[in-house]
Image (cartoon, rainbow, N blue to C red):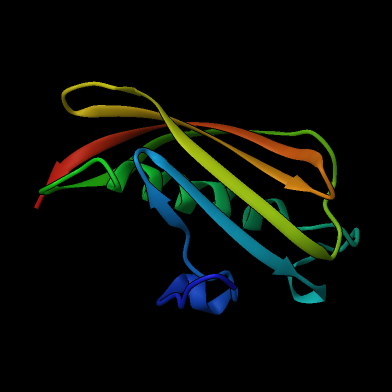
Length: 124
């Protein structure tokens, strides 16, 4: 884990992403707890990791707003296995109240997931 996480992220032992300038990064060590019945990394975990990392990338550009996921699309390119995952995210487009972000998950230098999401920017 890179940073201490609270709430749901602490349940999956994922840490919290580090971000700046519209980018974020998260490293996660996955083990048997994170696998599906087929023995590969659960797709729901991968979706959570990209969603969380993209949200942090967007937060680095905001003042009094909070990003709320309004659409999330994942392309699963290959199955993951126990070991280290690297999640990276970057803001692609920013509108007045909507932001588009992309993310990737890699393991052993190979792409596992590519994600594209739209976030609504909600004022506090």
